[in-house]
Image (cartoon, rainbow, N blue to C red):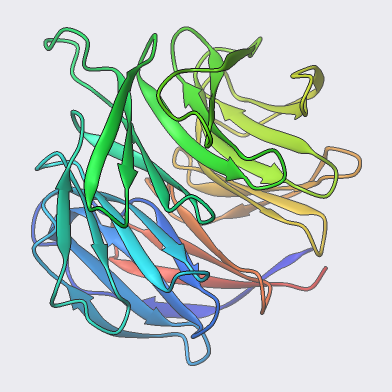
Length: 308
């Protein structure tokens, strides 16, 4: 087995129904930030001691968390108030909020351009609400709100190509936005499986990994967009993370509640690790090869060590 359970981190009780969403690690300080959506808060975890430190409040419907180690900033997508939050990790009490599109979720950041992309889930009852918003972080202002053809899912920034990739659920595709020209969709990559959802990048081998609601993990060559492989998943996926050092990929499947672990060289599934029903989100501490699975029913995080 690759993933070995090390223990659990107790997190604050859920205030409302629901649980957790996206998470990110501040590598410079070994701190993990996870969106505790049920509590409108960001829970902060010490990745060395594996313990909860404190929570950052007043982030209504917080869904996404992203860290820029380059600029020492934390970003959140606050789906319940149509804003993104920007703050220093040392000063969570002073959060700058910027209005964006309808129900922001996925986040990606282009540090050389100081641009934050918020992928907005939108609302079918609101015309033209499927968009991605571009925020100038230095100016604290949205500079573009780009229409896309359907509901967005997750997004990543590829520094080598200087582009954002954004999953679209339906039609099944990945849209590409250039950081130098961030006011339009530059091109589209077609995905042959319904419901692109989780997304991550292998920058060394220039590949995207796209986990789809159609229970397939799709490997995409960059920049061509050619589909290289499709692998079976244990269920409908959500968050995925690529561990470049170990050449492993982790896929969270909330039902039945497992992590599928893949070898990214062969794209073979190595193992399926049980978590908890509803546990659809993960975090990766790449420096310590730890994987955190967030458990909504027991409001805690399971900590796994990848032995390679």
